[in-house]
Amino acid sequence: MPRIPGRRLLHSPGPTPVPDEVLHAMLRQPTDLGDPAVAQLIDDCERGLQRLLQTTTADVFLYAANGHGGWEAVIANLVGPGTVVLIPGTGHFSDSWAEQVRAFGGEALRTPWREGLPIDPAEVEALLRADRAQRISAVFTVHTDTASSVTSDVPAIARAIQAAGHPALHVVDVVASLGAAPFAMDALGIDVVMGASQKGLMGQPGLAFVAANERALAAAQRNPAPRFYWDWARRRGAMPYQKFCGTAPLAHLAGLRAAIGLIEAEGLDAVWARHQRLAGAVQAAVSAWGQGFALFAREAAARSVSVTAIQTPPGVDPEAIRRVAREQFQVAVAGGLGPLAGRVFRIGHLGDQNEAQILGCLAGVEAAMLQLGLAFTSGLPAAQQALVDAVRAVNATPA
Ligand SMILES: Cc1ncc(COP(=O)(O)O)c(C=O)c1O
Image (tube, rainbow, N blue to C red; front, side, top):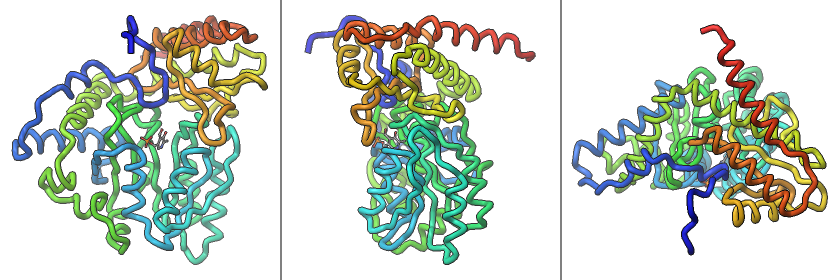
């Protein structure tokens, strides 16, 4: 493949660009597993993730795996044949998690997916109230469904579970939201959280994690389903070799530690505000395009700060826009998944992103739309104005 001069702008919602500091941290010779530096590295990652998740009580388990591995870790520990879990419909990613639950012999109850809308907490509450026999052992919530770019209201869902007076565990997928949107595990009473390295955590793909509190660990103890690699009890030992059920993925851990350091140096509040600002710019641009281009997420409050799914007008192939943007203008955006294949394309704006990258991405996408002869009004002025307004709003806020 010929070298691309400069950088191709990566605006998939994962993998996301990896900061130089993270790349450099990964570029080290391995050490022997008995070296105290290995235990320290693992401990730094576990403590760091606890701080990002805002938990002081949950145990963190790290896996050499992708997000599906994180899902499987949750399922292997909490689901066995006949176990019932409620997975509210959010589109592609909750569908996929439900499929994985069924593959383990579990039963996945669903609330219907409401296109363009977040999970309805009232539906969750109603299903739990109706479950008088308390067969539902857990609610699996996808915080941000990366395919639809809709973020559900996890605090409202947590309140719904509480209001129903149901003992189900609450398990949350933060794959697309951690390091981008506010999340506080202990304060929300979440029992299990799972995530992966390649999105807001700005890492190379290949590292997944689960954080589980005492209630979840006790439920796992009661689950007789066979498991080994994913087993939380087996991984609770003090030795690095036990913690990883084998050799630890040292380079990935070094990258994660560096990424957590970057997030904390910027400050979690500042990171969340930056994501909000950049998402606002993309939403402003898309809203200006008109001519049948539209934000897929219908409620402003539920629009993800990580990714924006853009519906194309009838007869306009989102894959063509994607192809020209990537091949000709060096901007990589994502396509539609599952039920949204061929209906949307998606701009990722999470992780190591800044204003210049977002404006460059929007300009490249618009260039592709121009090249394809599509009708639209440029959204660049609206995006620029949104960024200017966001800075003015911060400056106007009393310290
Ligand atoms: C919300 C969410 N959950 C789970 C996954 C699965 O992760 P992976 O592709 O790393 O297996 C993804 C992937 O994009 C995701 O966006």
